[in-house]
Length: 90
Image 1: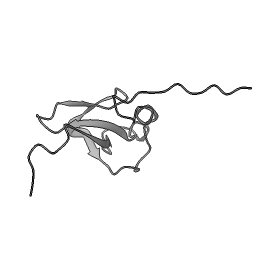
Image 2: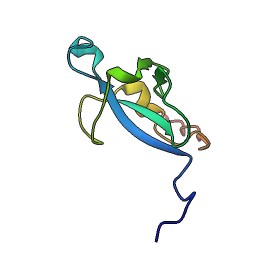
Image 3: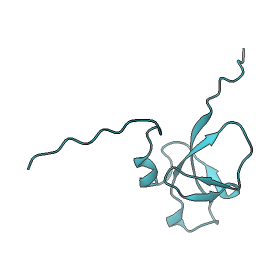
Image 4: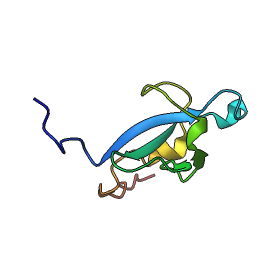
């Protein structure tokens, strides 16, 4: 049985620019928060802030490709409280 409205409002997806649309150095894997409702915008914004054309993206499996370091640093949920790192004495 399928229950309506059980899909989360936002889904985390991994994508990168397709081959031939950018040089290899720009094809790192980014994290995108996709909204389950609504139309697809012309540009999608990765968690790191990079704007990429929707029709130039390819969706890849988690763990594939070279990850964007900034996206990885922001991989926790947006409402997650970040605790300060304990100081390490010298």
